[in-house]
Image 1 (cartoon, helix red, strand yellow):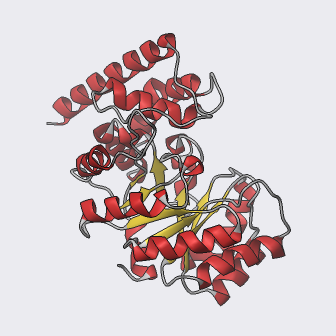
Image 2: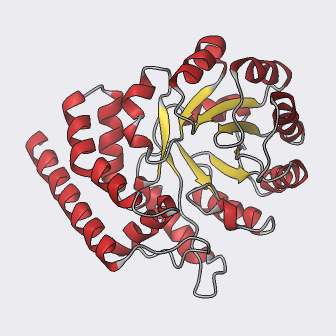
Length: 313
C-alpha cells in the first residue's frame, strides 16, 4: 500500500480509470471478467484505478461486496497503479467500508456523499473526519450532491487529518472551486468528477485540476488517453474536435434518460465486444435506437483517431 501523499501525487500525474463492475445473469459480482477488464485497462497508461466507484455501481453494492471487488482489483493490478476503493453511506457503514478496503489492500479511499440526508458543514466535517481517523489510507473527498464542503471546513479537516489528501469536484461551482484551490493550493490533489468529465477538463486544468475520472476510458481507452494528453498539452484544436465529434453527442445520448451515466458505459462495452453483464436496478438499459446511435458514434470516433495517428506518423 502507498503512503497517502505518494498515492495522491501519483493520481495527479495522469488519467484515472473507473472500471464498471461486472455482474453475472443473477446480478452477482462476476470476478473473472472483472479482473480481465482491469487487466485490459491496465495495458494503457493510467495513474489510478478506482474500484467500486460511481461508474462501478457503488450505490447498488452491499458492504460485503465492496471489499471483494477491491481485493480483485488489487490482485490484478499487482502494485502497478494505486487502487482506490469506493466508500460511503452513513458514517458507521463508511467507517466499516474504510477498514475492510484497507484490509483488502486498497491504496486509498474515495469518500462518496452520505446516503440521503443533508447536513451542516460541521456535521459533514464530522463524517469525513470519522472516516479519515478510521484508516491509515489516503482519503479523497467527493464534493457532490448533498455533501458539499466549503473551503474553510475543508481547510480545517486538512489541518486535523494528514491523510485527507484529495478533493474530487462533482459540483461545477467555479467560484467554490477557485476558493478551495486558492486556500489550499498543493495541499490536495484535485480530481475532476463531473459526469463526462472530459467536457470540463480544459477549464478545470486552469484551476489546478490535473486529472479526472474518465468513464469513457472503460470502452475507448486509446481515445480517452488521446483526449487527455491533448488537454494537458493545451492542444485547443484537438480538444475542440474531440468535444464536437464525440463527447457532446455522447452526452446528448446520456441525457435522454435518468441514470444513463452508468448505463451508457456498459452499453459502450457491449458494443466494443467486452460486455460487463447486466445493470442492477434501478438503472435501465439504453433503447435499441440509442444503442445504434452510440455504435455509430464509437465507430466514427475510432476511425477519426486512426486517421489522426496515421497523420502524426
